Length: 127
Image 1 (cartoon, rainbow, N blue to C red):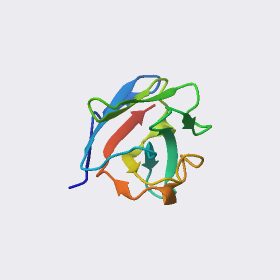
Image 2: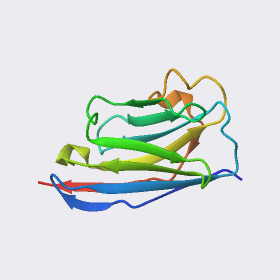
Image 3: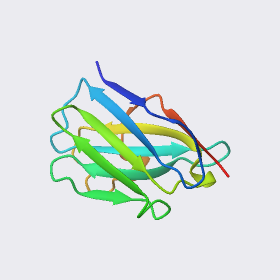
Image 4: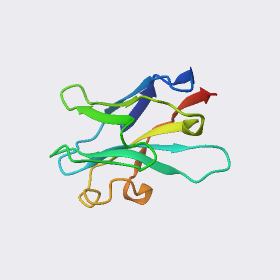
């Protein structure tokens, strides 16, 4: 059974930091990818950061480059997102996503490349 379980969301003031995590199970990655997406009310879903599992190649949205860092621990089946310098516009529900199949490698932030989604964890940044 495929499971992606996010944790670590919460509320923080502007300029603060949060670390969210995702434990995943029930599938193998091999040539697949892991990523974080977010969606705020009334806004489109946005790819935040992604990683190609085999090589560790990463990609980030321009809006978070230099502030967010994605990391994977393949021994623990865990994906994390370290978020520093948080801004009110970072407020959203954050989703952990995964894809086992080949094809996501060069399109890490495209939501259409992912078939496995977690339930999300809320991140709220106050000004």
